Image (cartoon, rainbow, N blue to C red):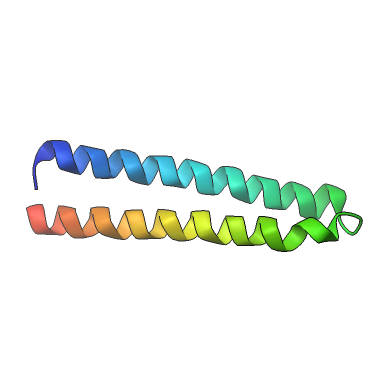
Length: 71
């Protein structure tokens, strides 16, 4: 794997981590500020949070595998 490809994977990990953090903040805000009135939003926000965290985890594992292979 080229250095440029590794940099792209690193950038992807940073982007997915940022998105996961933003989604987690949305879930936190729902829990802290809007429940129980907004309970109808809970499943959608929780699922979106799960999916963004899973995307970050997959990107992190892909980067780690590429770095291990390159070493």
